[in-house]
Image (cartoon, rainbow, N blue to C red; front, side, top):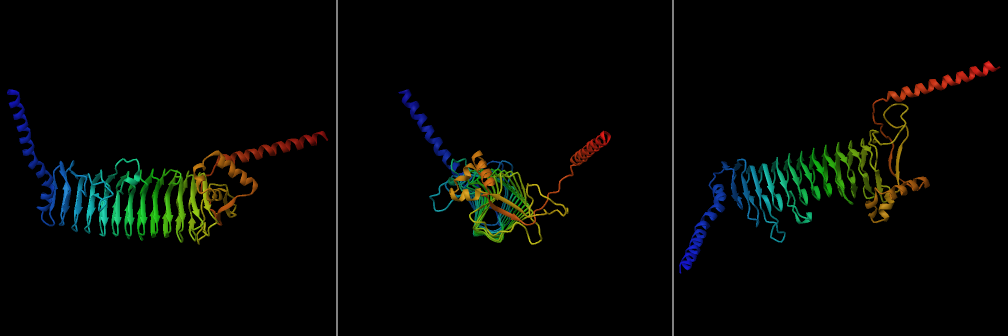
Amino acid sequence: MKKVVVTFLATFLMILLLTMKAPVALAKANELQQLIDNTSKGDTLQLEGKVYEGNVVIKQPITIIGEEGTVIEGDRTGNVIEIEADNVTLDTLEVLGSGMSRDSREEYSGIRVMGNNATIQNVKVTESFHGILLNRIDNTTMKNMTITGEKTENLSQQGNGIHILRSSNNVIEDSFISGFRDGVYIEYSDNNSVNNNTMRDTRYGMHYMYSDYNSFENNKFVHNIGGAAIMHSDYITLENNEFSFNQGSRSFGLLIQTSREVHALNNEFHLNQRGLLIEHSTGNHIESNEFFKNTIGIEVWASAISNVFSKNIFSKNSNQVLTVGKNADNSWSDMFGNGNYWDEPMLDLDEDGIGDIPFEYTSSLGDLIEKSDELAYLFLNSPAVQVYEKTNDVLGNQDVMALDEYPLILEREKDYSLLIATVATAVIISGIYFLIKRRKKAHK
């Protein structure tokens, strides 16, 4: 009988505790939303360094600032934070736990921005399908953020770090983005600036579609399948960016596809499968970039015409330039007579910094890639391909990949040891000559 009573009391106490705890949990779930709703228009809400439960909606212009350790965690069914008002600022927060399903009415995100003039800074976003999503709004500033995706076997199951749709005049700077399908995806959005960011371990570090007059400077695109892809977009400026270690059978540092008036200036392309890939594009300017130790420095398809390549440095690439298809009508020097720097010995007898004769870069691999349905990419570094190239070179079966009318000469430090050795050799030869001549005279 005592056992029955004890069991009954234990069960009763457990039920009582559960019913007492339920209102507390509900209060915690509503706490942050209540704080937001109670903050007057234009005021600042200061959050403690603890975990708050989302999902929350911001419907009026306020500033939310967290202490160190402030976390807003969603219930993994929707957006963690929705910004519906203009002029909202989020500062010093960690946001995590959006819905991950692609079968829902919308694709969810850690922060969804639906109001103009938002500022998001010093924010970390994790465990979310999209990190930040902008849709049909303008003038959002995002800076000093860390946005990391879920570790999935297939990047296509993950959303984008920053997803921008039909939104213009936005700024992304000083941020780190990794582990997403695309680090930054921009579609039908003009006049955006992306500066001083690092995108790595993504499908494309940056992906532009139908977006004009955008610029990105001083970014690093490292260890992606594709560093950056510009598609169907015009008047894009890329300056002082680094495209490195983007490797795979079809990888590239930068892709320019079906685009015009793209200006790529002073960028570094190091150790990529292909530094730059350009196709179906016209009127683009590729100037003063460095292509170093890529499997292919620049790959140009026959569909790319009237593009200008000038003052670029090609150094230690397995293949400096490959033209796939017929030789496209592009220029390898600009209107001012500036060609490119090639990793080849050249004569410059008049010392004007320009090679005395035009430079032709030849290869037989462009034809091989086209005929093999691009399977040749898998074997570009194999000894068999190198033998193929050497054989075609001997047989004279190589095609001109690039014709540079005004090849530039790299300025190198003068090697005085070579000069001294040359003079010494000349002196020795002259001495031997005079000794032999003197002996002949003595024997007479």
